Amino acid sequence: MGQKVHPHGFRLGVIYDWESKWFAERDYKDRLRADIELRALILDLLPDAGISRIEIDRNANLVTVTVHTAKPGIVIGRGGARVEELRGSLEELTGGRIRVNIQEIRTPELDAFLVARAVADQLERRVAFRRAVKQAVQRTMQRGAQGVRISVAGRLGGTEMSRRETETAGRVPRHTLRADIDYGLAEAHTTFGRIGVKAWIYKGDILPDEVEEEVEEPLILEEEALDLEQSEVEEVVEPEVVEPEDRGPQHMAISVEQQEAVARQTQEDD
Image 1: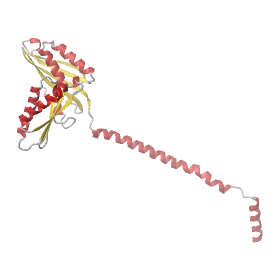
Image 2 (image 1 turned 45 degrees about the vertical axis):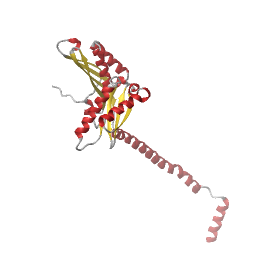
Image 3 (image 1 turned 90 degrees about the vertical axis):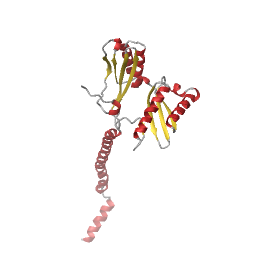
Image 4 (image 1 turned 90 degrees about the horizontal axis):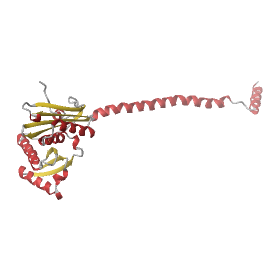
């Protein structure tokens, strides 16, 4: 049987960062449970806000919660009333100070969880699964994705035996660590049971800074080598040009007066 690995966890520490940022020695399980309860409460209070993921950053006396949503207006509310209500509910749950940040997702078609959630919502409205999946794949590719893969599994169309159907466009290199692949899972609650929807979206490669530096260094060295070669050529050419100018005065003709003076001096010597 094929062994699957979560695309996000597979790339943690390579190109992705953790969604919960804190350190605990003894109370690890308590903080982990608190994170799960925080995320569950936010999703329960804002089910129609198009929330993709929630990041939690814990400091000494403050917990910062960053909500990534495709509909920030619903989360903020009129005059920020809904955000204050959300913050009050979170502080009541945790018993500490909470700061809520709202991050807008500008292209929800490139967010895997939102794509999977949209397909699941259509399945709940009894839309044909093939039509819903193909339309989602086309919209994602039109927004600039390099590859997309959507898989639905369950009692598709109300059949007695469950099965899996997959639609793919472009390429999705799931085993390449530098590949920026977003993954999302959603469930559709139908009268026939639950239908699972998985989405993989490939957005391109993320190269680490070390690789970019290694590529740039040889270019700089080549330019320096060319400058050195040019300077050496100039140094070799300069003496060839200067030498005739230096030798010129040595071969100039002696004047008549100088010749007579030299002749008189030789006669006196004799």
